[in-house]
Amino acid sequence: MQSLEELLYKLESFVPKSEQINTGISQATIGWQIEHSLLVLNGVVTQLELCNPEEFVRKFNLKKFVIFTTKKIPRGKGRAPKTVTPTEEITQENLINNLQTAKNNLEKMERLPKNSFFKHPFFDHLNKKDTYKFLQLHTIHHLKIIEDIAGK
Image 1 (cartoon, rainbow, N blue to C red):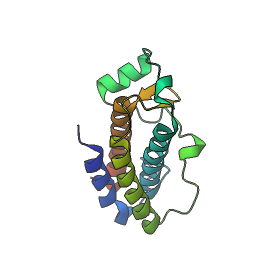
Image 2: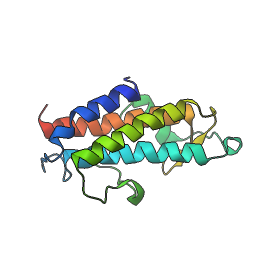
Image 3: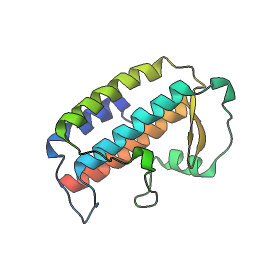
């Protein structure tokens, strides 16, 4: 699987097409897909920074097991929480700024303790390693949607 750094560069390559839409694929533009992916990544890293790693609890989670094993998030099954739904005007300048923030956040994430975690709405506690994998899967999921919108 590609690294998050590589996936961010792929997202960045679609910024010039940020206004493109294909309602047969999604009601959202390419820019919305990029912004949502960045909101998730940046928000999750913030949660990792704020957590108390000593409170991490590992539990078996069937949904997590299936998604992490198949390496695929099904389309149209989930809805983005309000906290990671773009609300401001999506401009290429904002996308580039948020991409830079995401790159900086990946560097921060590397330095966090291994049991830094965030509480995912379906998967429960994800430690740093599982969080990284989730962010990869989530970004790939949205890149596939972007590629379909772009006709690639």
